[in-house]
Image (cartoon, rainbow, N blue to C red; front, side, top):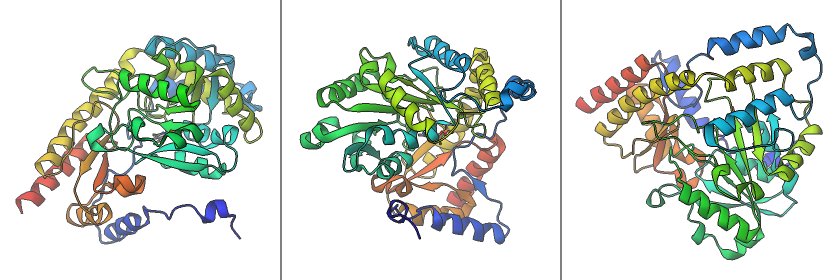
Length: 384
Ligand code: PLP
């Protein structure tokens, strides 16, 4: 029945852990699920109110425009200017997405012909690889290793592969490794992309979830980036809006137009009222995101110390919602035994690619009391 493109997808690596979770629940275990990065905090009230008002506007009941409301695209451009000092033309360099996943999944269709090579990190958000496969492309893996700060070693990419590659996906602050990239890395990446004529797709949904007042970057801050790069952005994590499905791709005008062309043949744009609420989100006062960050920072401190005391090797991250812990053994088996002994659910690193083996990922998107409880359970297990 199925087409090869879904028949040949890698097996669902989370199946084993899902089964273990169900079994534990059936036994009455109080599970603390730290496996998904889905903010538990509600969307700020002023954004919800903006949606309620916009839902009453009958103009929003009709088909939205393909590229998104100009007012939303302007709000994205203003936000980029205020956040990163990056100037964007809202008409040509910003395209509204139905969540960034949608844009990431569709983008390769605009640039990849069957057989074309595209560079992907490993471990990584799995959609990059799947999207390339769906477009008929050949993913070429760049391992993200601890000794390189979980950045790809661009000098280690086979020059023949680099010359063949049409595009490269990257994501900093990174899911799942929680690593951040500095400007020097982005500069090196741009030079690599220019030399090899590769289109950069930088995925940046975690840029605002940073700690200790050390902000994250947009690749578009680097001189010349617009010639070879687009960046995916999302309101999901910054404003606790994962359920709303709203984001944008910005940067190189031709690439943005290409993605728009694919999309106009697939979807009919994001709900107008959600875009109006998105404008309210992007125009929020600085305090809104500051207070979200403060909550996460507290949780990161609690969980990072508990995991370190437990003997896992990890660094306290500069950004993201994740802790990437080295457990030095089969990550699925470790995750299962952790669940059995503590009721804590984490994600086995191998689920993000073979180079994630030996690690497990913890998310901090559960209420602080639950994170504290997880820390206590780890402590109890150690003492036992
Ligand atoms: N990119 C990365 C690295 C993610 O971790 C996620 C969600 O977890 C997304 C993209 C998708 O976000 P959105 O909700 O905007 O589709």
